[in-house]
Each structure stands twice: as structure tokens, then as C-alpha cells.
Length: 264
Image 1 (cartoon, rainbow, N blue to C red):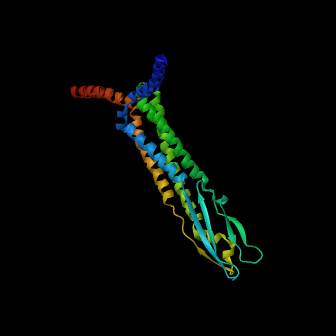
Image 2: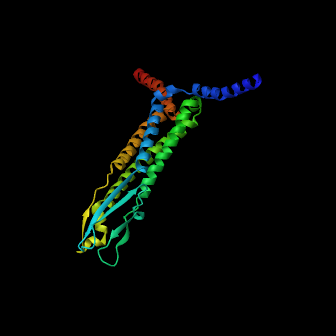
Image 3: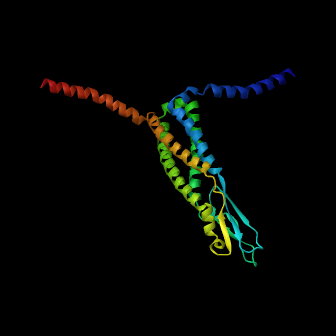
């Protein structure tokens, strides 16, 4: 029994020892440096960006009152959200004649391309910052000794900077179009029953776009974070060291030239 108990204790200790070794090997002070601290902000605001856009949902509506006394007031409530394929969102338009009661209509526009690109970029940024933080904290020696890692990190950072600018601008324009297509006035303008004299249409509540507006703001914040991080990542690359070496090597030559001119 003693041998089995000792073996079970060693088996229990081995995972704990592995976790302790992993935590001891992490260089937590790296997070205090700009390179690591900005990566944490990028990870956090990437969650805010794709979370606020991907989880958005809103409602628009209108009311239709038929002049025919047999018809009651019809309230139309249309729910929409990510990925903003509004042309696939149905709603029932009431009819004021006696033969039929309603007709299936759809909202106008498909704005899924900028929304999905924005959310996809946020998810990729989320996973890349996690991978970068693991390398910064656990494999910091490999990052500093191997020249390829800083170069790859710099190229990816520049790429994400450009893509965040494009994604934030495109989603901002797409959100403006979504607001125009989901206004209650646009809903009543699209219903044919509102253009005749047999019904009176009135606009309902305007959908709240606060969360969607915040997502665009988070997109531009991510752009500024990645753009500011380009300099700190560039300082880790060999290109920054070569520039310093050239500057240091040029100073003795310039001093020698100046001395030769003074002798002449």
C-alpha cells in the first residue's frame, strides 16, 4: 500500500511541478515594457471590437392604420443584427383590402461584407496577440536571439495596422448604410400600403445603435494601438540595430573629414 500511495503522490506532484516550472519560466516583467503592455491592450480591445459588433441586435418598426373599420391597427416590429444581411430579414406588411391580410416583405440591403471582415479581423488579432504574448513571456530568449521572430512580428504588426484602418473605415461606412436602411421612415417608404389612401402609416421607435457605434470606435482604437506598436517592434528588429551601427560608424569618418579640412 505504501508503494501505491507514493506512486500516486508522485503522479499528483508531476502536473503541479510542470505548472510551477511553466509559471517560473514566464518573464512577467515583459508586460511592464511597451512591447508587452501594448500587446495586452491589443488583445483586450480586439475582444471589445468583435464582441460589440458581433453581438449587436436591434429593432425597428412602424404602425399601419387602415381606413377600413374592419381592420385594426397593425404594429410591425422587425428585429435585425449581425451579420446585417437585411435583405434576408422578413416582416409582414398588412393589407387593407378584404381579400388578403398580409404580405411578406424584406428589409433592403446586404451589409455583411464589412461587418464580417471587421469581426474576422478582430478574432485574428485576438489569437495573434495571445501567441505573441506567449513568445514574449515564455520564449523571450528565442525572440531576442533569433532575428526572424522580430522581423515576422514587425511585418505582421504593419499588416494588422493597415487592415484595422481599412476595416474600421469600411464598417463605419457600412454602419451608416445600416442606419439608413433600418430607419422607420425607410420602412414605411418601402411598404406599398403606405403610398395609397386606404391606410395611414406612422413610424415606430428608432433602433438604438449605441453598441454598433462603439464597435467602430474600438476599431479605430485598435488601429492606433497597432500603429503605435510598430515602432516598439521595429526596435527589436536587426534593421534598427543596423541603423545605429551605421550612425556610430559615420561619426569617426565625419570627424576625420572635419580634421582634414581644418588642417588645410
